[in-house]
Image (cartoon, rainbow, N blue to C red; front, side):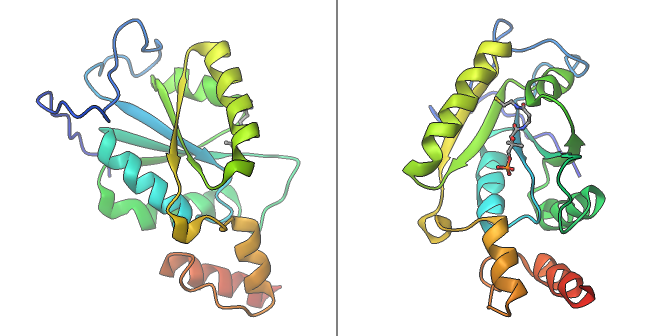
Length: 192
Ligand code: PNS
């Protein structure tokens, strides 16, 4: 599902430039021409807000890795494989998205995959404090940059937790998640 869309002629100021000095060394450094970024998260499940950020990142980078965090201390509604399968299904048409799980530090995942940039959505000012702390920690740990993308206002209130809560009580979330996620959520909630 990964396709290379490297185009050295592109000169938009929005495009991050990878140089040898900013690119971490890692197992994928044999493809140094590819501009990579990661969109990390729990994705339990992926929402239209996540998808909007991933789609926008996929237009700025050659390959976007969606990294699904494994949190052993928190049981989600969907297990990691189910989350990955849903993300793969709803990002398939983008053509340059790879979906993987990780545990431990995000910067170690970045190093392993030779990824110099983390792309995150900012929904509101309330997101900013913690996101800034993480971004500063991550660049301090490893030199990996964080780029913030303003969330589409249509999704500024949206989170996986709220979607699950509303769905649990029969609220309409069909405009907030992609159709395969809606189907999976309804099926899972019927089982409970
Ligand atoms: O969807 P979420 O739960 O808000 O995502 C949070 C996530 C996965 C992006 C964040 O918790 C994370 O990066 N965890 C990996 C562990 C790590 O690197 N911690 C140090 C961050 S400074």
